[in-house]
Length: 229
Length: 229
DNA sequence: AAAGCTTCCTGGACGCTGTACAGAATTTGT
DNA sequence: ACAAATTCTGTACAGCGTCCAGGAAGCTTT
Image (cartoon, rainbow over all chains, first blue to last red; front, side):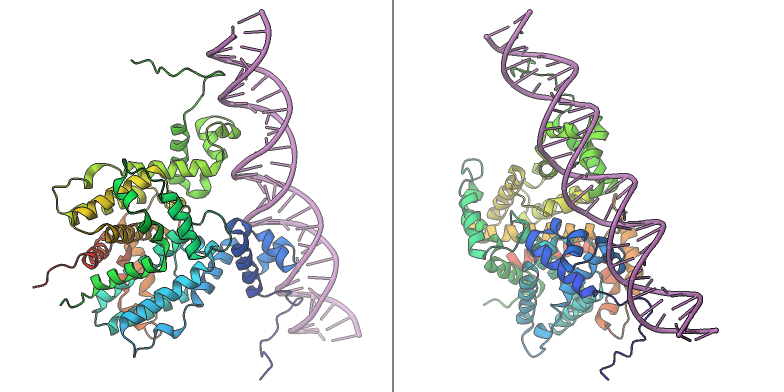
């Protein structure tokens, strides 16, 4: 049973696997941003000639697509599929999980929203979200609409967050980025932009987890109004 | 008074203006997507040698930045600044205006969210949105948070919408894109993805103006709860 | 065991990219 | 008239994605 049972095809053994290529691409992406994840760079990292990559993927776009799929797959755990918990908690868990996974790879976020997310893992994610909103009592149409609203919010937030980083490489800690933004916004001229100048502190925190959750909860309130007292 | 009064600097007259370069860049972007908007392409379009572009902008990133700023500026009209109208209407007008302007240039959307939007026109947009939400009765902190929530939604929606286009060039009509998506989603296996298969119609309409407004209204409801009857 | 077919990887090349450098041409200030 | 400043061109370099031809490796058939 340990035998792969796969009828080995002809020709020399492969020196690599698709996964090793994706590993290399991701680590280059993390270190040096999108420009660093070149076919030549990937090949050098795994120790083959540049064009050997084309044995595993038809072109660079396919590498990117596979990488995006893999990152989406990492999230597909059932952290938020526990149907015993309140549905709001489950949505928040999913949203936080996605943000944590994706902002760990800032260079990949641009690639993700640069093309349609129509792979199997994206579909699986959508399915779970639809299930979750059905559990919340939404009818199928509203559930689907709400699902997309949430997806737009989550990916939009993450995209704007990583776009705020001024250089490639891993994101600095949140507090550091907020401090930097605060320094920038403090220079806002209060005569031309009075509201902006007054809101500098809050604007510095646009990229914070607090703002992320605040916005998410406003959306959930809009989807399923809470009781007022 | 028609005299520019600008003490012409030395050297030969400039053959172009910054705006002509941005025009060329935008039209290339519209026709052939991001790849087509190369420095060489721009230079050829305006009839100069490639490196002449560097007389007007320090590098390509500066061209992109200026182009993004210009597109944001086109929206800065006071369509939504009419403080006599209900604030919800004004937000919807802004959101629709932004979507119309930006999705007219799909190739530019990726460039827009690829970097921080911190130019003067972006700031002006933020200022007006803050003003609008202050008019709605929100306190400064909630107003700023709500402002960012709306920005995330608008730009996230547009980004996902243009990412759904499978080829460069202008977006096909909405109805056409929805039909194409419906064809795709109709193939969803209903055993593995029951909710998705059942919601295929709604999912095809994710990129529609209806869905866009539906999501926007849910967000507005979440920000300022409507009275229930 | 030998021959043949299939597959993998390499060296080299092509056309493209952004951009740096040197020089010729043009206009202004002295 | 001369000097200084500015613009644009020609050329070049390194890097990019990708294609092609060819040698090496290994399974399949004879």
